[in-house]
Image 1 (tube, rainbow, N blue to C red):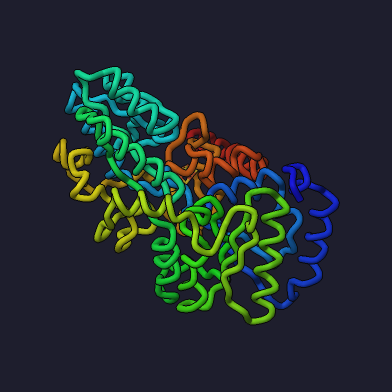
Image 2 (image 1 turned 90 degrees about the horizontal axis):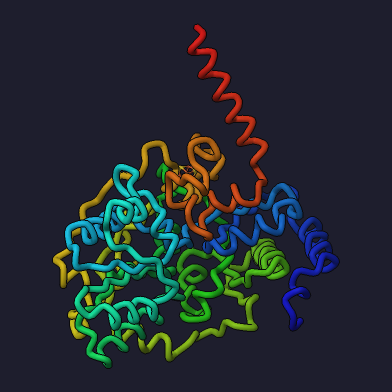
Amino acid sequence: MKYVDEFRDGERARGLAAALRQEAQPGRHYRLMEFCGGHTHAVFRYGIPDLLPDNIELVHGPGCPVCVLPTGRLDMAMRLVLDHPEVILASYGDMLRVPGSERRSLLQARADGADVRMVYSISDALELARTNPQRQVVFFGIGFETTTPPTALGILEARRSALDNFSVFCNHVLTPAAMQAILNVDPASEESVEIDGFIGPSHVSVVIGSDSYAFCAGQYHKPVVIAGFEPLDVLQSILMLVRQLNEGRAEIENQYTRAVTSQGNAKAQQVVQEVFTLRPTFEWRGLGQIPTSALAISDDYAIFDAEKRFAMRYVPAAGTKGCECPAVLRGAKKPIDCKLFATACSPESPLGSCMVSDEGACAAYFTYGRFREDALQRQSQQRAAVKARRQA
Ligand code: SF4
């Protein structure tokens, strides 16, 4: 297949769905985690749950960079821009709407006078530094392995052009470490989530290669199938996982062969290695502290490290009261399990990171309206309960 509409072909989708119904063993429950928020959105956008037999359950994972950034890191950016009037903070749009401590977002900080600008890439931030030589431009770097190479290239460009008013607040995180953290949770603990296999992230895998997940199969006996983002990609990957599980296999398979190789992109890996170093530990929203799960700017490029330049300090902070993002990100709860879903929390007025981002599970549930009826029903029940209490 060559063109995108071929990967959305209804006839082929029905064929894959029929194969799944036939091959999923009735006495068995299959719990498959789609790690990446891009897959969560594809799943709901194309109505994939409607095509699956009841005993195949999709568990949503933490693969949304905006969602997993803990409140304390967002507060660091907020303090930076409020305490340093010389700073222009350049950030991707999603980050601006996430509520930090006391429900304040960077957009609200901007309304209070902070200089926060939305950018589409690190190149925009470099341009801001060039055109504002009297100001300090800080790029709010977030993302998994997909967005790390562009940040590394931006830092290399800043050094090449001797941009001394540019730095990066680095929050880049690593996929395999998060998968390992999920698999490491003690099955007896309340935090544990039963997972039979992973639908592996595709864009990340273009960079790091499919071999990076070997530990899932080798150490934990969990199969991984790296999947593209089109509906047929996702359905085929589910079928590949079901077949592995039925046959008692745990292998790393690559459905997305049109872009992913076993070794990944060596050049991208090289620039990342040149500019970054592993942090000993990093806090993830929902997953807590995970050892060696994030990157910092290496000593050779320390002058571009905003944390060092502005002596930024991390202070852990709680998210919005009642927000279930941590459990949603672990796969332990679904967005509709949150009492705030589609009542107090919506994409227009998000109370947690999972409702903000294009890759957040709550935003996926809300946007594609799959559970809107349930949510609206609950909303009206809640309203009726409040009214009844008032009348009593
Ligand atoms: S619905 Fe809103 S408050 Fe609830 S978990 Fe999702 S983002 Fe958090």
